[in-house]
Length: 501
Image 1 (cartoon, rainbow, N blue to C red):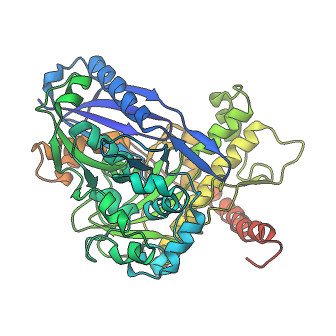
Image 2: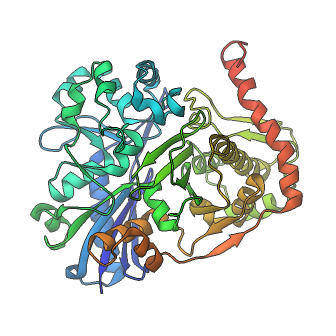
Image 3: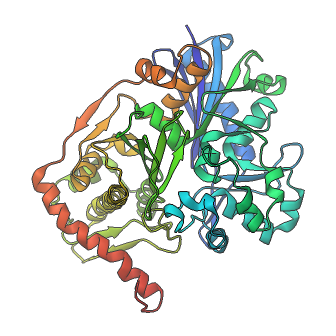
């Protein structure tokens, strides 16, 4: 019987889990770490916190699973993407990591778009905008604003790659991350060399890991140092993972063309599987071989979703009682008595890709209570998802149902709101821990238990429940959605001093 150690390195914590070949989670432990926020929509973390959390959580999960550490065959990690780190020759961080939600590199993103390079086809079909979250804008920001850090960096990579180095000593990047966020394209020659050259950033090519490994591929065995810290054998193999949300597609069983995954947590990400490229304004992607060989992934995303609920909890100073709020919110009619939320609290990923857009709560009265705002946030996030699905449909991709993983799957109200605002059925697998399940599938596949990732999905991912959209509520939301779509251009016009959006 094979056992596999996984880690889901998220925005607020790292959770280690132990799985068997049936996809059953036997042990699970989370360890939090700090994110430091500052003006200019900046967000940073200490990479050493990731490693320390992984060691602590892994030892705890193995103990909870009551599995002999010698029985662990493989490790696979799913981590946040666009979390950029600059490392010295010894793999030590030269500065805090610039995490995915940090959008300080606005000017640099504009500079990337201004090159007009062919690699920009993944950004609205070449028309942009380019996201300030991505690798090249962030690396360019470091080069421009911290030139000594850039020059001294031996490696500029991501959270995933930092952990790979600590586990194995190997300098290897995930094909998943580089196709998703570094403008690497397997069907267009690989690295975006001309793009970085046009930016005067040719030195970056030597700082990126030279080895690229596809999800489920073997990177190396655990190093003696890492094995000692984890209490494991050096016989344990480390399999390549990737971005938490994309590995979550595997954990949701979303692998066939036409299927659509919605990964929820601090943010929302929408991913569809296609057999052909889809490039158009309002969508990110598509990315070939990003998750599955010879398949494309089309992408949309919302920067702040569950994090807005967390923000409301902080405003309520610890008095938020989710059960009571859900009960009261569920009794409200769609529209929350005239309340409407724009979900751009940390900028907008798609369909606008506008890092300067901000959140808004419109229609407040003295009669509104916390549960009105709570539900209005959920509805605003649902409308944001629908706007992305509409952009995908205009580009030529239309999903027939949504499969949800992550935090939103715990709320029956939020699931129903997603079904009603999108007008599509919502499916929730038996396990909502999609990135961890996906990592377990990759570990088992890489260890030789399954010939393909699809075979691993068939054996380890179990179906759960299905929520149908309600005709009356969907019709009501259709009208409110038009009001939601009117908010962005109106608020952008105000932000720009009355100019037309």
